[in-house]
Amino acid sequence: MSKKISVHALTEDELGQIARRFKTLGEPMRLKILQAVCKGPRTVGDIVTATGATQANVSKHLSLLAGAGILTRTKDGQCVYYGMKDQLAVKLCTLVREQLTD
Amino acid sequence: MSKKISVHALTEDELGQIARRFKTLGEPMRLKILQAVCKGPRTVGDIVTATGATQANVSKHLSLLAGAGILTRTKDGQCVYYGMKDQLAVKLCTLVREQLTD
DNA sequence: TTGACATATAACCGTATGGTTATATGATTA
DNA sequence: TAATCATATAACCATACGGTTATATGTCAA
Image (tube, rainbow over all chains, first blue to last red; front, side, top):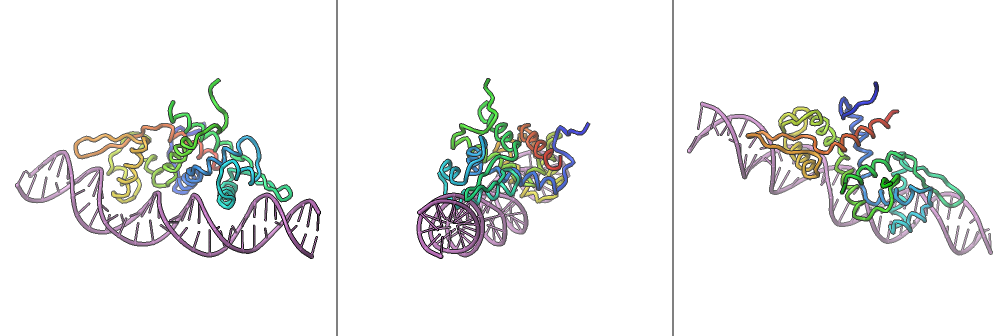
């Protein structure tokens, strides 16, 4: 067997990486972006419209999310499409969502 | 069917709550505390020893984690035991851990 | 080439937050 | 009651980080 049931035997480094992933997801605006993108790739402009945030702000968050490996980035002409790469991120959101009221 | 596959139809408020939960888990020291506690309730002193952090620092994180509903707090004499309350938190850590190298 | 459009980046600001030291609160024992 | 131990809190500092404005970079059309 290879799966561990609980959190243990995690190195300082692993703890740091896991925490970083959570921290990346720990911003409402970034979750809003994930929501705007999880149905399929969207351009920055689309996402700006969907979120109602500033273009600069959205761009910064997108860079961060892509840099973290959560989003894909595809350039097409002068448009840039961001799409979901890490499905686990979506799953995590769903899990947390479910326990909110359940 | 009632389960949603992807993140959508989330209100601003829900996004905020989900983000807050992630943010709470987004600190290495707090994950270290979860690790120290996930096998069973531990006193503050135990946790201080296990983490190697300051008593004041640990106490602050414990308050935060208990306040967020992730840990339980039980007083026994002059000792205070903190234990796992939110098993989902552990599960989330495991899921993220698994995708680190896989 | 010039201008319009789409995205990224730089510089800056205010605030949130983790860590520290010192002290307070509360419980136990002598 | 006094002293000791366990935990919590207060005050403070430094830094990280989200948001904003302005500008740079790059691509397309005229």
